[in-house]
Figure 1: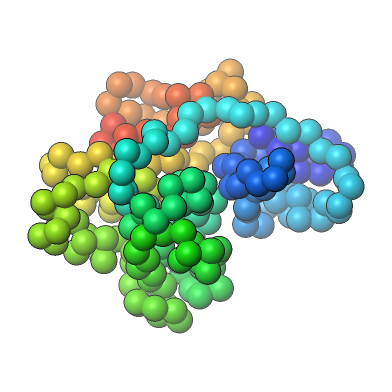
Figure 2: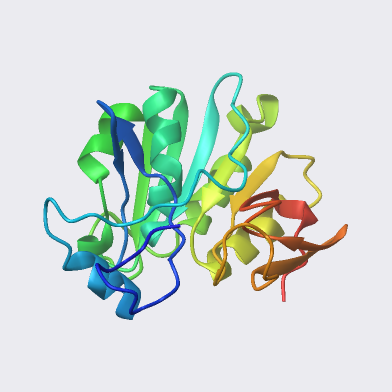
Length: 216
């Protein structure tokens, strides 16, 4: 949870995935979406803000090759997997347009294979990233050697991903994004419905087995 301004306006911190830890420096990747992130973009070198963390859970470690499915800013949650397990990931990355394909050059050097789509066709394959992903998991090579799946992105993408993997016996993890106020599970502002009842995304999550989530 990051304080987004040098003042207390906005008062509440904002939740972010840890994008990268390198040479003793924490890095966060974000998109400007509202007042909080706009204030964050105006912070200058040398300014001091408050940070609360680490919070929540993390993706389980893969034991071998794995699949990463990223939509838009979702790469902020998944990039450390690519860095930690180099040349192990089959990386599926989708975005609305070429301008929103973030950290792509770096990801290409880290992943085993890369598939890229854009909604408007301004880069690589035109369409949704779930389409080539579905083709891949239905291919003979994948059926013989199913791999765990790690995903983060917009809710419509995750809903489609859950539909694709349903009934196939695959291990698929999804990192959820919800509006959070406290970040420590006290305010109950970020609950999501699962097969085991309501869970706090900031405390029991943000990473869940995708089949355990009951999509609204």
